[in-house]
Image 1: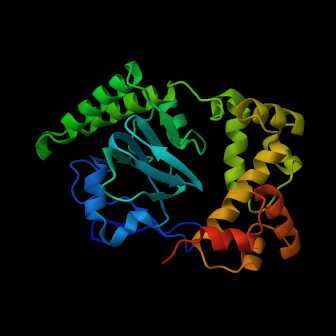
Image 2: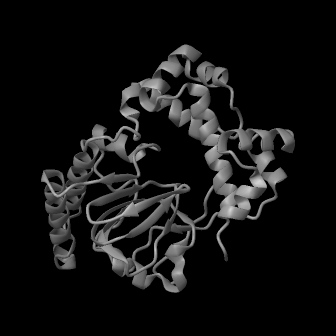
Length: 298
């Protein structure tokens, strides 16, 4: 790992991660580069191994084709593919040299503190991948990214952090209004109830899977939480809770060497047998089989 990248300490312990530390940036908390350049500076295939980051990355593919995997979903990429990976998600890049594109990296603190931007940056849920055709949306986003690049590549002492923040905000707002696919869901549809529930779920998924506990903590009824979850995801509240626990289980099985019994206890299961049944019910495979299939070679 080159000096420009540093390992990040994650709350998941041994899941490898990168902190934000670009080799040369005129302002703190933001970088714009090419995907090909990112591959060149990461020695020994670091990007091809599963890892997590504690910052946002937004990538618009402009050349070639390949794949990018995020949280156990592999997304085929081609010109017009837009990827937004959020802090905490685990990912693995495809082979270098197969595609290129504009790659933004920014910390959660970098964008301007506007209500609409704070909502986007703090969201834990949102489409990872969008497909932009050759029409207006692609042209608009390309033009906005060109404006960001023009400001970012000025002589260092003339780069304006405020201009970069506002241009980035415009990029994010444009992405937010892109059409949703039928499978994306709409996290805004659940309103403030869903937003509060998801924040509490991120804090508490390892300690409780009971919808009643979340309702009590937030001051809602289970029926209210279910309505919000159905509006945002198409799933009732209990399924949303269980899906979050199942995702964390997948991350830990694939990216750590912790025994299954230890993972079970970490996620609030008193008996490994119950944990195994839960995982099989939600993923269709046993913890051991999932680990054998998905654990990355070191």
